[in-house]
Length: 275
Image: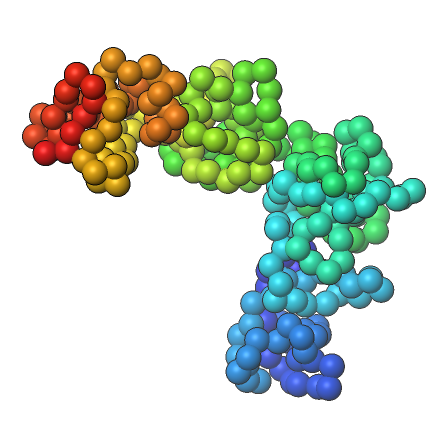
């Protein structure tokens, strides 16, 4: 069994307090009755998350925390004490951040990007706001144009710092963001380039023509929902296009050019119209 992670275990026996689950080595753990899924029979496989209860005993739950050990998450502080901060991560017992793992004192009700790990001294699931200590910086196993999962971790003067595939830090430039982006969001992204110093540039859109094709569908859907007409064309400002379609003017022009050639739209002085 792995503490702080999801485990697939076998339903072994029911008791008055819940269902005991076993791993392949015969070790057992309690899944309290309030979390036992309906119709689970002895011998069935059950996926559970394992953490420590208020008495520091390992316990299983079918509740879904915001993250597991080895992952980054954007979490809210529920309270601060003389020992540190406690974060809401979706379980009954809050997630602890000691002072030494905070970058400046955390404040109640504020949100922070943290990394979850097992404290080697206490064997407890712990979080750290010093996320730079847990990112891979040397061996970057990514390729240009690769689709990746992102977590928006923080803002910088250049744009948004994003955690890539729960492993690397990358940057999405402010002038390449064409939709509302908030800290904690988890959009898909695409690797633009990996610099010589291993810094990673990320885009929220596919590069080149790969970005145009899905956006043609966005334009068609918008036209259909707007009775076949949009007051946008190649003379519209980038701000107008971004506000209505969440794409750049360059992408918009390529997309409507393709739609025009396919005779799906007409381009008029005051906008585009569905054929």
